[in-house]
Amino acid sequence: MTAVPKAEPEAHDRRSLHERIAADLRHDIMSGELSPGANLPSTAQLRTRFDASNATIQKALQLLKDERLVVGRAGAAVTVREHHQRTIRPADSLAPAAADRSYPWLTEAAKHGTDAHIMLLDVRETVPPADIRNALALPAGGVAVLRSQLVLIDDEPAELVRSYYPPAIADGTPLRDHRRIKGGTATLLRQLGHTPHHCVDQVSARVPTQEQFEALRLPGSLPVLCTLRVVLAADGRPIEATSMVKAGHLYEVLYEFGPE
Amino acid sequence: MTAVPKAEPEAHDRRSLHERIAADLRHDIMSGELSPGANLPSTAQLRTRFDASNATIQKALQLLKDERLVVGRAGAAVTVREHHQRTIRPADSLAPAAADRSYPWLTEAAKHGTDAHIMLLDVRETVPPADIRNALALPAGGVAVLRSQLVLIDDEPAELVRSYYPPAIADGTPLRDHRRIKGGTATLLRQLGHTPHHCVDQVSARVPTQEQFEALRLPGSLPVLCTLRVVLAADGRPIEATSMVKAGHLYEVLYEFGPE
DNA sequence: GCTGCATTTCGAGAAAAGCAATAAGGTTAC
DNA sequence: GTAACCTTATTGCTTTTCTCGAAATGCAGC
Image (tube, rainbow over all chains, first blue to last red; front, side, top):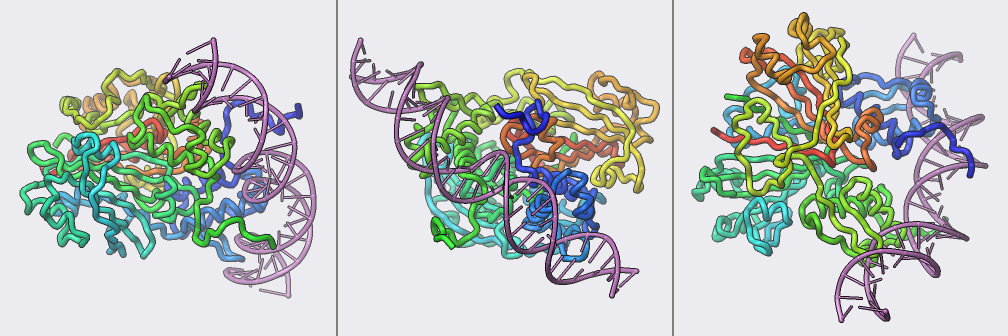
């Protein structure tokens, strides 16, 4: 029966104050409003802008530091870091020849040689989750060959990749072996007579599960960029279904389309 | 100086327990593990599975109810709701003729007529944010015509669209008028001699800003699916740059590509 | 050295998270 | 109908986190 602290009639932001502050500042950085090397407003300015105390501002900035978006040295302004948000172009994986086209507004993300390498975690036969089963047109309870990989950037986990193959395709091939595949699976599939012809990507923004959170060592509570890719042969039959879970602050994906 | 409650040496999930539980259950639902109409495990089962108390489980389920993912009737099991996650196919906007191709694994999202309509919020000239300025190749401090729209699904805000046009293209056209454009902007641009030829979409998962959070009336603390689309003419010059912010639980986007 | 600024620390009040146990009332199956 | 199971709501309590105010510390640039 006590009076409400402030007049907030509508459903407001349930997040804590420092999370909201971090969200707004993060947007300013990601949108390029604050470009790499630029100084953030001083804590005093931020205090008045968000009507918060010193400690709360510091906590918000700490979140951005954990995400490696900014750096703060005592005495100097907090500055925006060179943030390496990789721009992935899925179309290039099928037709690498066309990868030369670049656009002036793209940050030089994939340009400098990325220090990324892939770690093969596991290869086994398993009953896939429902979305994969649908994609591969498997019967209920049917199995598939799963290849789990972890992509590391600068030795930090960055992406979780789970590729599923129908047994009819994988049996008796290196796809079943717990070993890296030279030239990638696309090359192998082509050699096996299952030439990838066409990909369908479903992209969504998700809240990370506990498993994903720990596997990707996500800083703070960032979202995750989920892609479900189905690779089809020329006759339309599914060859491969891959679930890719990328850390939201490290990746973005680029697609091109048009009536060509 | 008290003993730590449990041995957790590594950096663990900083989120609260009911948020983590909700995240895992959400994943089971979104991946189709728990299909619409299916029953969730009973609260007793969930209590043992997550080693949490009744109240915590209830709080986690409340989050999923707020997202309209599940319904709970007293006495019966909590069941998964028909969740209408719209699958958007951006390519269809340019070549609607090809929209007939459908895939068996797609849920019938865009199939039944969506009860979506568009609300024109604002039309004005403004200095665009840095990412838009880059996309349109505008000089620093240059202005653009902004058309802000809000997409409503079932009278609930679902997507925030901000389209920017270079003054050279928008001046003296209905693009500057605070009025809906019959047939959409693509048709108008074609009539004006700026035929859209090619789109480039950059898709990312973001934490919503306070503004986005309130505009979209996001339940809980869900991420947002951000798309920056640049529409190019045949000669490569940018015609339009659009920032689309979709509520993460309502949308996913689908892209197709391949060496055609 | 001085000033501005970021950083750290302390205390204290308020709010939220989490547990335990209990009660109430609906649904389902027998 | 009855019984078992289930969701939902309530209460009390402890611990942790959030937030503020204020003061102290340390670094960078002039």
